[in-house]
Image (tube, rainbow over all chains, first blue to last red; front, side, top):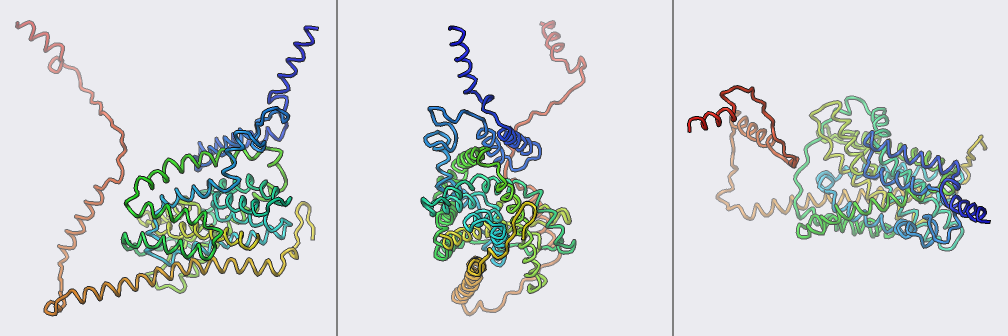
Length: 396
Length: 123
């Protein structure tokens, strides 16, 4: 009798452990998480983003008994992870990250050379192509929009759009399916942001000649403080009137920028651009990572999302470069644009601008492109947020 | 048309979707172009205002154009000063303090102990 009791007790403990609930798919996802941690540390691939995400993948795939009396998994209502995930599901974290981003970036390169803004719009062609591609592959329109926005190379915009589409679809069965896309779409977007140094250089080299890569751009003029304060306000009004659905992102972005440029709210700008954004990156990384529970994530659909996302990112890079080359046809010789900075039109700030600069320096170490490349880079953030707003307006 | 894994069906893109997609892209392009246009116009207006203000402020007597002639030596001196200034400029310090270790060969002449001992002996 006593032996039976002890046996039952051990069986109960064993059934509660991760070992007894482990399936091969959990194992694969844990290995993916560990590989990403190794990649981030060994190759310095945006570790600030990739490490929380990868640790989240490991945490989210620890197997557990689903019939526990206490909620445990990220999708179990009432669990701590679920509460943390709330900010992703409702699009709160992306909006707040945009506030920090606004307080971090300097709009001067854009104000000093306005024509470079158009490169940010040109890179949005990746979103357009992938949207149509996803529809051809049989994805519903809402899914296609979520997948296509990966080409904007901004995980926050991708999360925002997917969460808002899910919220907009209300109680329809499609809403739950769109919500299920948040994990794969965000992981793809963040992963491609981290892989900018791997994906973009071959495309940049393929589409430009050595002569084009050597183009020196005119030094930028100094931008006055009044311009720095006035333009965020003008941009906010313009973009918000065109696409009001993107207001949570763009409103916060320009608000953050005004905090920085006013010069009188340095304390607030300092907080949102350092401490607050760090906390949000941790929360968004860990929860999005944990949302990749194997039973939800490991599907044929997720692989397609990754393939389409990569395609979107590559087309966006190519779109920016080709558009810069087209612009050069119409520009005077002294105003020529180095087409490498066209690749910075994707919104991966500041990585794609840095890559454009490094590619230029490989050809001529005295050619500094970073400040020029920041203009399309920031325009890319604004462009992809406007595109997300338009998707919301058109689809819902 | 079907392939092994993926179903491709271009007819799934209805004419309405296509029009909306192209329209959406054009709106993004136009919005950002409008931003660029506003900035270019702003620069033109700012330059015009500045010229007008300068015209107002300048007394008629001083209207004669001021011809500044600079020699090559002066230009070289300015360039050298700027170069020195920028090469000495530190945006951010490293906040790392290092103590440089200097090893000295031992000799009775540099020995602290020996010197102290000798002084003690004299006492």
